[in-house]
Image (cartoon, rainbow, N blue to C red; front, top):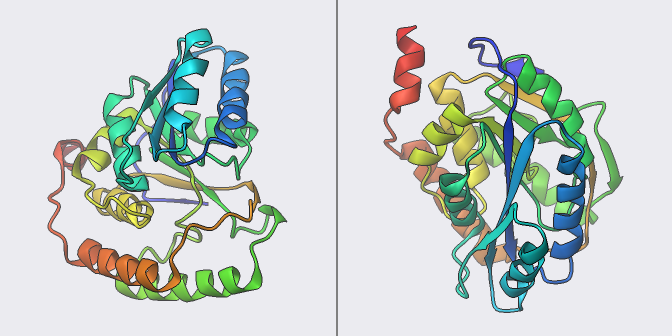
Length: 258
C-alpha cells in the first residue's frame, strides 16, 4: 500500500545501509556479512555504516572486518547515545542515492530488499517494512506481553501523533531516496526509539510518497526496553513530535512548488 503521492522514480546506483548497534558483538558479524554478500551480487555499488554504541567490543570487531571489506565503516561511542542518534549520524555520512537502516540483530533478512527495489524504482520516496500487513510473515513472534504492549503503544501513538495510514511504524527496515533522507534526517531530533515515528511524521508532513511492504520478521528474544522508564521516555518523545516545530525543509519546499 502507498500513501502521499509525489513524482516518478530513478534507477539506483549506490545504496547505503546504516546498522545501528548497541552491544551487538554476538550478532553483528553475521548481519554485516549477509548484507555485504547480498549487495555484492547487485549491479550497483554499496556501503555499510555500523553506528555502534557500547563497550562490548562491537566497534572493534567491525573495524577488523573492515580491513577485508573496504565498503564497511564503523562509527559510535562508548556511551549509549540512542538508536535515533546513531541512524541520524550514519545518514549524515552516507553517500548513496538510496539510504536505509536495518536492525543489527537481523530481524528482517536483507533479502527482503528485493521488494524495496521495486517500490523505489516505481517512484516511492520512502519504503518501510511492515509486520502488520496481510502478506507479512512473522516467523518467530514476540512474547505475549510484548505483543499486548505493542498494541497499546500503537493506539497511544496514533492518538497523539496520527500516522493512521501507517500499519507498523517500528519495524527496523526502512529505505529512503537521497533527497528525502537528507530532508527528513536533517530535521529529525529524537535520539531514542521514537525516532521511527518522528521520521514517518516528518515524511508524511512533507508529502513524500511512502510505500509499506510486507516483510519476513523474527523476534530474537532480546529486549532492551525498560518497561517503566522506557515507556515514560517514549511518551515524552511522542509529545515532542506532536508539539514540535520542524519547518518544511528545503526539499519539501521544492516539492510544494512543483
